[in-house]
Image 1 (cartoon, rainbow, N blue to C red):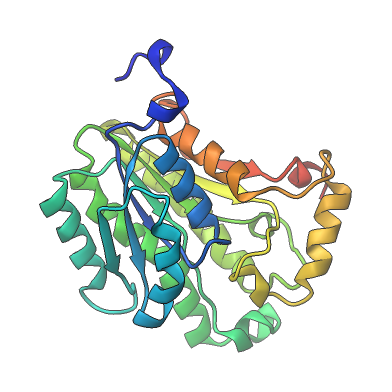
Image 2: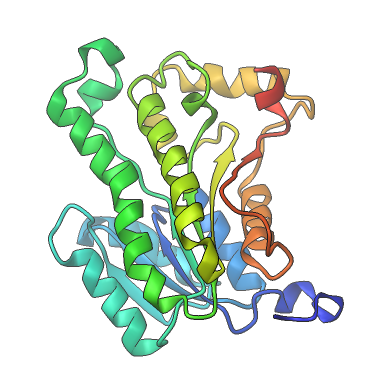
Length: 263
């Protein structure tokens, strides 16, 4: 383990290898995390879902250390496995995993939970939750000296937030998954945490009804009275991924200006 008295910010993650799944564009939470990890010295593997989404992700790579840039669609058989095979071949190990993908069919996301379809619910659970389990299983043998795994959640998993709808139960399942993975992988010094940012204007969030109202409410009611930024999320996640946080695992880390304590 690194002697923390000798760490400089630009070297906090020096030599570390990180996989980031979920960068959509320069406004995505995954990009904020990737940028912070890269600035701290980590090398990155970044994925894109399709050739169409690749055109939005590629511009994000300019200021990052990204020796691996690969397609990954967790709904396609073999796609995720190919990513980890490339990581093993190129690096032989992995230190950080960031799972920042979620999905729900629009008609189910915009409807009441009581009306959601079975297929829609299963699809949302597969992409938003079970894919994290699959990634953890593939990452485990590569985290030979320990590591850190992260997934993204939201306050709507804990409280009933208007218009968050079906994603509330899905994210609640994801947070429970984090606790069990932390329990199972802890003996290998692999830490697992969920990051819960406050409302941010991302592509994923734009799919929620009346999201602008949620943004204004968060800025009004949060103790800090401002919205969080990509840098806020990126810096906190980088800290948690580093040797400065060896005993933090199984938690939901709120980065929301304190909104969750009053919302």
